[in-house]
Length: 115
Length: 114
Image (cartoon, rainbow over all chains, first blue to last red; front, side, top):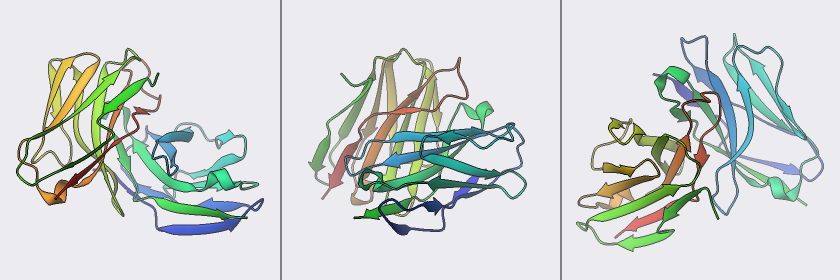
């Protein structure tokens, strides 16, 4: 079974600065997908960014980018120019397509952006 | 209107009661999922369904049951609630035709069992 580990339960950053959230995973598969979800206090689960394992290029969505290191099984999220609205719980998730698109989540990292 | 709707949004009940959490979707997706979220544990899969005739257990199905009444409806039941089932519960959907697409989540049901 796959496991996903987020080793930083809490992080904080000053507004406008850059922060990186860590995620590592364990799998023997070669084809899979990785996601970062954001959960603000409203408790919605909002997709931030996704990465296909077969793509070497790191995904980018506006201020959000990932550093995908397949050999190291690492998938970190970088948030540039942090905004107060980025304050949320962030979850890293793994998906193996052949398992019915089930998601395996990490424990989550609570990010606080300070003014 | 939300694409994935969960009811109720919040629920407080007592140990031993039967509880049903409901999920409906307008996205036309065939796959539906139930997760529970606990602090420090992330989200864990309870049950998932590929269609109305296909129900599968997830990693923590004990104490729960589900029913897929139609393609758009997937309910989760706690036959006899216990306090350690207090959690935030999420329903999610996905489409078989787009396996690399992320799941779409409802807004969650916060369940407290006293």
